[in-house]
Length: 342
Ligand SMILES: Cc1ncc(COP(=O)(O)O)c(C=O)c1O
Image (cartoon, rainbow, N blue to C red; front, side):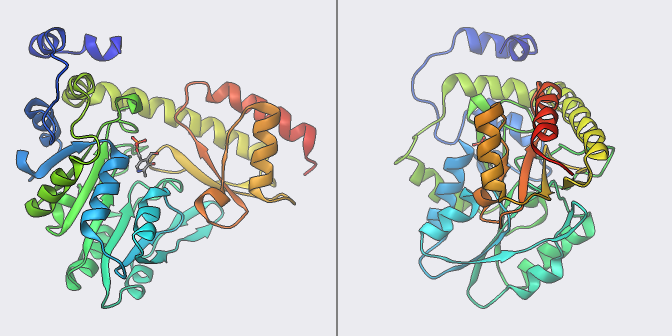
C-alpha cells in the first residue's frame, strides 16, 4: 500500500487523506473512470462501469443471456467465464486448442465451426489463463470478423492485459475494435493489486452497460471508496506496476524453463509469451488431481490440476506471479526427486 501511496499526485493524496467513507458512485468515481479511460483508444467515461471482476462477469451474463442461448467459450477457461452461462441454462460449446510440446494455439477456423443460428455470445480471454496463449493481430481481427458476420457479441476477458514478455505485441482492447463487444480488465493481474477487488467493463453498448448498472444495485451497489483511490493511483502510474510485475514473472518463467530442461521427461512445457500462467502436461501414472492433492498435503505447494478446469486429467496450471517462486521450485524439485523415477 505504501508503494501505491508514494506514487500519488498531490491531488490524489489529498483525496486519500480527506476521504469520506460513504457510498460511492455505482459506475465508479469520475477520477477513477478518467484514469481507466486513458488506457483505451475510443472509450468515453459513460462507456465504463467499475465493479469487482467476478461480479462484472456475473452481472453481464445475467443481463445478456437467457435460457437456451448458445455460448461459445474457450476450453480450458477460468471457471466463472463459462459456469455462469451454464447456470443460466445456456447451451455451451467449447473452442478447443491445439497442443504441441507445451505450446498452445487456438485457431479461428475452429471457432467458426462452432457458430450456429442461436449463438449469442463468444467468450474469449487473451492473454489466456491458463495456457498463456494470445493470438496475433491477424487472428484477433479474424475472430472479430467471424463474430461480426453473425451479429454475435464478444465478451473479452482482458485481465492479463499488457503482460507480454519479450517485446511481443499487445493487442488493442476488444471494446476499441469491435462495436458489439464488452471488455473486462482489472487491478489483480496487470497491476498485482488483487486485494483492491476492482475491475471494469468497457463497451460501446451503452444500453447494455445501463442494465449492468441497474443489476449492480442488487449486489454490491458500489465499490470500496478506499480501493477506488488506490486503483486510480495505480492506473495513473501503470508502468510502475507493469514493469516490476513483468520482471518478476519473466524471471520465474526462466527459472521454470531451466527446471524443465532438467526434468523434461516429467512434463511438457513451452515458455508462454503472455500472462502469468502456463498449462503443463505431466507424464505421471496418476491423475493430476491425485498428484496435486498429495503435493499440497506434503509440501504446501498448490498446483491447479486439469480437473478444476474440467479439462481431462493430465495437465496442471503453474502460476508465475509469486515472489517466493524460486523457493517453492526448490521444494517442488526435492519432492519430485524423492517420489518419482523418470
Ligand atoms: C481470466 C480471469 N478472469 C477474471 C479473473 C477474476 O479476477 P479477480 O481475481 O480480480 O476477481 C481471474 C482471476 O484469476 C482470471 O484469471
